[in-house]
Image (cartoon, rainbow, N blue to C red; front, side, top):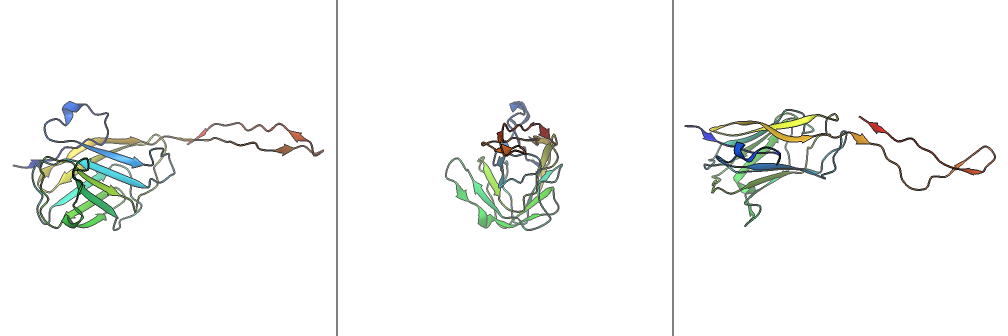
Length: 187
């Protein structure tokens, strides 16, 4: 019988879709992200029901590019981030992106499910946010589990042009004139 791993990557999904087994969240930092910028970290918080053993993998896949390249990625792994905050870094042998949308963590020794949250925070190899209005969804799978797919992640907002300060503009005679700059949005 396959173990089922269920996760939410946004609070907008109805509770009924995850109540059976577990929950999870993806956090983007800084929270004010826009198209063409890069996050400083991505965090994945989830629960799984049964233990993971040596050689098992946890695979988190986005439907858009979220990683800069297929490369080793620097992540921290914790159990119960709201409680004892036990560092599980030694439990993970490798953390690698296999392409620009897939993060794979390979288990080095037993990780107990214990019904608690597990937190993976990555702060390297993060790609540039995709085009404005892109909706990014995720799937999550651990070895021997049934994948949870179509999990809402985020929608990339458009870049909003803005200006501030007190700009000074002069006419041909050297007289200070009122400065005017039309603002709009760019995509």
